[in-house]
Length: 488
Image (cartoon, rainbow, N blue to C red; front, side):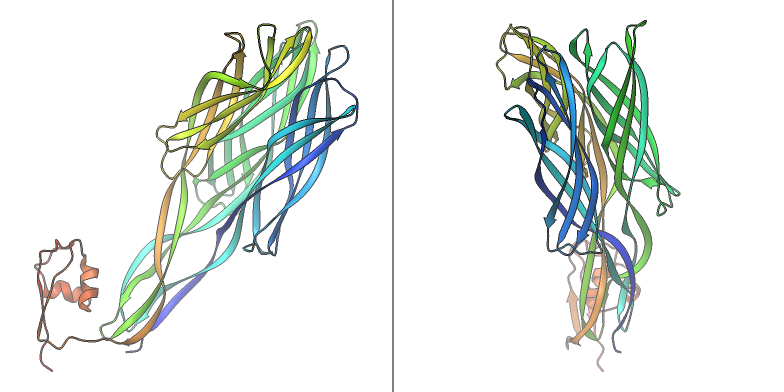
């Protein structure tokens, strides 16, 4: 009987590339100013387009500088710049979609005569997705088939923005620079909606009694993003970035406090998986001819949970300036963190700008607090780890030494790997050679099941069970199966 395979085809979405690159953006400030004591760049994505062999993206940076004027008073100035950059990759095509995340990795202030220039290194991480076609065999005429059922997955991405507002009182007369980080602590999908909840970690460089102070606040948020592809309740993966943050301060002289109103725009990007249960042929053989079998395998990392950790780290800090007892620490502000994953957690350093007074003048230096944290209970299939700084304090316990303490909030997106292997093509490879002897003895391998035994004997599984009722599967490898061939 001729071999004839029937296939089912379907379209799905998959990730085709993870790309990353860096570019340098320079912002020039024309006015004359004293010593720059703090810099904070805020970045947001404005465009991301995929073309043939190239991905173009663009963004906007608003840099805030805090400097001391001729009278020693702290002042601030802001300036923005737009930029574009690209990534070349032969896997890119116009029909694809790019999900781009931008970050300010480091920056440097350069004096150019009486003006300043801030050079900012911008890092970009881009995930690229595309539609693909899958085809799997559902039946084969003229062959004995093993049919399986499993879930096949299709990637669904979502994005959106949301406003988060907060107001509180603080003992200060002005806010010079607000900086913020955001972490997603939970994300789930229900019909038509993606629900995202998390926290914003706000750090304010403020002025109190004509001296700089650092104020920290945690702002919880819960947002709903519209998503037409969302149908059933399930877990999802999501990132949050601060696209903009603004602070409005009103001084209440009677109470001696400052009313602070915070408005932040959060950008979200994430994904979940549509699943479809299908039946397909996972293996096949013929009693009369040899078969050529082609297989395909799909591996999907499903998001199962978000593990949340709060860790306090402390120790000696590295500083760029020489500090002694003539330096009076004023504020540790604008904290950030760099980290790398380890076998059981993360390691890295917390960076902050230390403002201190020396000889009646305000100066600043960068401080770095190294840390190593073990994350107990985090699975081996963690998709991504995120770390934010909730607050940092510095002190000079011994002359020339800077000791720091910081609170870290860490999230780990745990997952479970699902692997599906299915048959994509069956071809006839020629007539099968049948042994001519009257009796053969088959010695199975330990662990062989009914299907493996039937395939090696070129006989239907139900025939094997009927003719060998004494066999118990899986086999131990000690059995001996006799095969009788009647004379034709």
